[in-house]
Figure 1 (cartoon, rainbow, N blue to C red):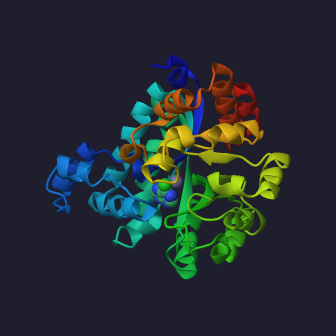
Figure 2 (figure 1 turned 90 degrees about the horizontal axis):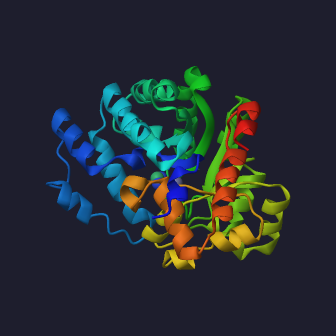
Figure 3 (figure 1 turned 120 degrees about the vertical axis):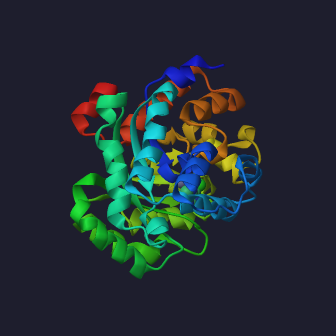
Length: 324
Ligand code: ES4
Ligand code: ZN
């Protein structure tokens, strides 16, 4: 076991809090809230984790969320993650949440953000992990729905560090949300976007040029475009790569085929993250350990990944420099 992979202090920058929902907690909340899941028990749910692509994962991911109903549910979800993250070396986390996946089911925006915020605001004191929230728009929903979500978030502006873009990528290019992101930037939020996971390099260009992203989530397909690689390197635009996710969703065949080492060799500001760890086979320390083994990364490479995570983070500059 690679001790350094777990012990290294690191920032987790690509984590969907709804993707940390473990089967045990899913069924506890289903029972407490009287919600019937389409799976009879934990074993049946786990058998549904044989994904063939992003869409097949998202179907299960959104189904499980149906049991999240109260402010307390959202607090317990985030607490369950935060209370375990330190053993993975996490000292800072910027967590995504998907408000539209909840408001579309009739859960008020305030329930979601108040519940998550209760965990996030007390995380540093309780667990020694600074935490912040990135609000994602679902790209397979309309621009109008994204604008409505942005409006609902305005009263909570200072609880949100950035806005992002996630869910089914192909057919929903960043350009669809150019005007939403312009408004978010005008409101003072930073921007990020999933791009180049299943979608082409053109989507990464759009995320940079139209959405003005501070970093690219996934971005692994950027390697298909040498001009894009040069741009990412020259402007030191970070990529939040999620190796175990890429294997589970068949973006790559095996970890040994993962482009992470090539990305490091190209001097890209690449980071390693866990995406939806309850579904993809491991949290961030496990991601570090498994890529180290599969790609023969030495301790210096792991250190580079951890340093990159702080450079790529939205931690305020003086706190961040202490980690670098
Ligand atoms: C996601 Cl792996 C991934 N890709 C896109 N959207 C997502 N939402 C949660 N996990
Ligand atoms: Zn993701």
